Length: 485
Image (cartoon, rainbow, N blue to C red; front, side, top):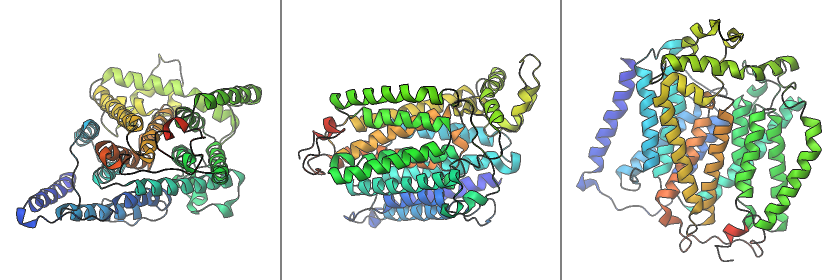
């Protein structure tokens, strides 16, 4: 009954607002001022990352109050006011919107048709905090009026945020606690991954995903920079790269390599690509003898030995075995969203596995795709796959559109990078249950879909953004050449 209440009240408010919006007597002339929604969306992401639940929370019934949630509610109310007064409008639904709605519908139905109060309302909490609220943020950013100036500011802030995350991660692994802010990063009761660069997320995977996006945001300035600024950008990029290393997480390292392949390799000239191949080959030859024996077995967490870290890598087949057996029993709809922790127990005593499956008893699934497969079956995995494919398609279409401003196109490429990081890390971790991952993902994809559906607002003739003299002599030359200097 409580869940029905929390669904029914917002629905009734929405219906009342729509009736108000379409009363002809209330129609106002659209405002020409800039929309604050994109920047507020970025503030929500940053507040949730640095000043989230660990930093501040206040009990308020079933939903704790945090700064980012208050800001999200305020932003939604502001957008609602702008919409009711005809200062914002809703874009027509496209394939990406429908794919997201389909996934939310699948996991929503799966949640309410099973024990959503299990483990202190854990399934309902996952649905609300890791899915519904991020999709609300997506919806706000996707429908607001977005300008090239907003994209510049967002890229700049993310660049600076990446430097902060990198320096914090480095301070963590070096034990320089005085340089770590917020303090809960080192004093949190959550000791898992302590000793790695966990950042304000208290999780090295989420920290790495954010830093990779920030790394690419810094590179957005390269085509518009002179030699002095490019030197600064190289220092920033190297700092963030060291920060990614400081996560001491293999999937983050692999995702960073993929990000470089997408954001640096794709836009580069043929000559630049040749130099990259030579440098990459030389680096691989030099580093392979040093790193090959340590890559699968090295000490990372303070409370975990090197031997235990080696064992953790051997647990992947066990997670796969358990997931396979669970899928065989419930292939279509799965065991229920958020029910993995309870439903896996009978499968841990499989006498035919030949593996000590019981050692995974206290752990969640370590693969986002297997997690969806076991909990929501083929229906849920298909919905997730469809959404990711539509995200990649939309992002690539934005990047490939050479009639729009380079800033807008680069955010399309950033969308591809974000999805590659999500999937690469998702092969080794259930990234859907790590705080702020979905909020950041849906924020960036909201921007990308906004550009995709309103590409006319970013056409070169109306949003010309030229770089300094000589800006075409850079790794983005082929794409930047479409913009007169």
